[in-house]
Length: 299
Image (tube, rainbow, N blue to C red; front, top):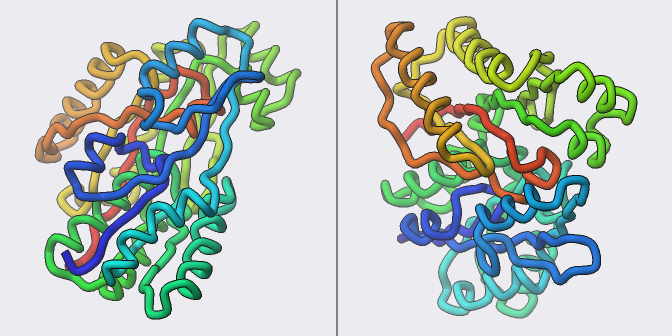
């Protein structure tokens, strides 16, 4: 490897997949009020934390970003060996993780003059950040240098798009994404939000009546995007993601793949699904489910 990659845990690739890719992870902290924080994907599996959320309705967990010391612990052993480092972080508009990494890199350059550390604000989140990290790994494995990889990654965030829904409006209300009145009205009418991610931020894609219709609508929005943008999926990474319910996700993913065949696309390789991490899940509750895609780099 010409350089080493590190990502914060909000990429939602999970520790095992990151290990297989040869990528280091710096964890966010998650916890409940008056209880110790857990390091995401280190001290507690994502599925277990989601189950804790499901077992405590009305109790809202919280997150804390990685510290400068966390990044120093990840950077220092590599920098001491003279290895260049690419660090990819959650959208800086959402969290201070990127700033912690930048501060750690600056401190380490003073400690170890000549240390090569590139910190990249992905401007992405969840599965988009994960696919962005995977693309960085593909470039690394293809023999690209750190500088070549950073340049090749620059155009990709603008191509990223997510379509998803969640069942519990109270988490969105608690996180300030919707107002109390809207959450109460939505719960009364059994309305589910359709949420998107594009251009470095969350967007509203509308609402649907009930969970089943919301999942149908997510698929429709995704397929419409493919047609409107005339997307060649051979040039894109595709991912589906979920929170707690693996069986619901398996059925949803199957309809995505079947729908692609009906639209005339070659069936994409069925990849390991993303379990959306609790860094994002504290804002959506344990029931997020959706699909996302981002363009591959030109090699």
